[in-house]
Image (cartoon, rainbow, N blue to C red; front, side, top):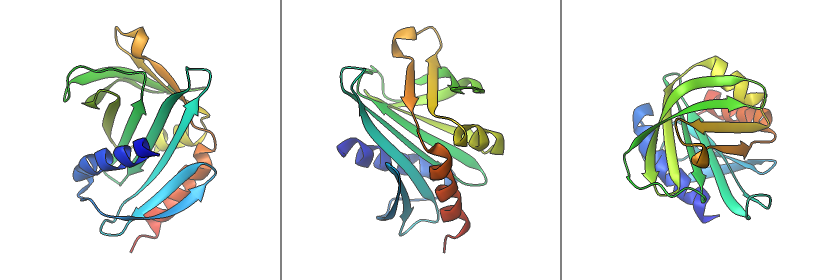
Length: 168
């Protein structure tokens, strides 16, 4: 999927916060998640893309990576039409059963993409691993708030953790 590649490239920019650069990847599948270990990088990422037939068959993509310093998430939703690249948005982040962060900062990367870079917190990873849905509730903007399906997130994040713990 083109959007997954785009998200991976955008994530590479976020990996600067982790001390990484662009490279090719080796891939492993966990359900419809792709776990990638970049050949010229020490960090891995987990990505999932899908079309939602209940939302006009729109594309959704999520990419997650982390280190002991940061968690980086890139979300792409083709129902968004952001105006200003670089704009910082605030959104409450949650799952189907727990709030993760209030007023988290998200940077607009292009008209359909936002990226969040957060200080590493194992509680965030634990909540994501138990989730089936991820929600972004943008401050003062219900039209752009979304709910993204993340089935098997626990398995994908376990594979991501394994990749991180066994990097060369």
